[in-house]
Image 1: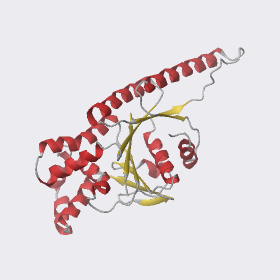
Image 2: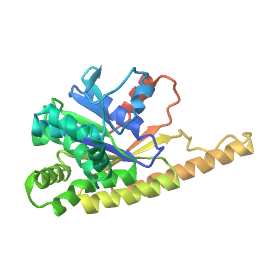
Image 3: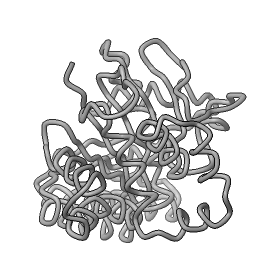
Image 4: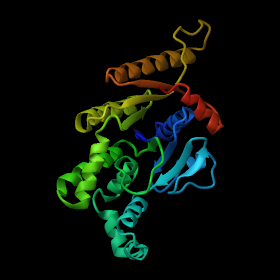
Length: 282
């Protein structure tokens, strides 16, 4: 089974978690066994989908779709357990305050552990990952770049031994466009689009990853002018919004990347909102 990894990132507040959910729903709808993963300590989907809890171990959510929440320390502990296989030794290390502090401050160790977990199925290293697709609701732009740089930096710093080998294996998966996909979510506004332009250039230039772009929360603005008897303020709003959205879309298309447009979806039903987004994602 060939596994794909889809990272979803973007500037904070652009709706990347919502788009990641829609992407995972689409993959599951197509019959592919899919895992939707959040990174960090707190879950967005727990509240969004009104679930009791989401934890490290994947849990069933919809047909062909499981959910999980992965953090660096938990991923590192699982990796140590896979290597050492002696629970008592693992507990001594991870329950020691000095060791915990070392894990927290060690540069890139948390990011490396998370990427090791995400890529473990492809690399056939660690517990089985019985999924065809892993959709990762990844960190926002800056932290996401740090995440991708972690194995590259470690591979340079550690030439020999398990750590170096694992880092090079992870980096190889990340740079394989057949296995790793990146989706950058943005809004039709100046700041998010500028950050998207910079991120896309870095992903292509530094990591050889050609991301797709999702333009989120697009207002359905008519192309024709408002009626002559429309209030002046409304006519100005329509004109300004149409011009801004067209300008932002043109700038994003100039990046020569696949582009999807998701409309602003006004619904208090999260499942309905996600399924409407699925229909327009390409």
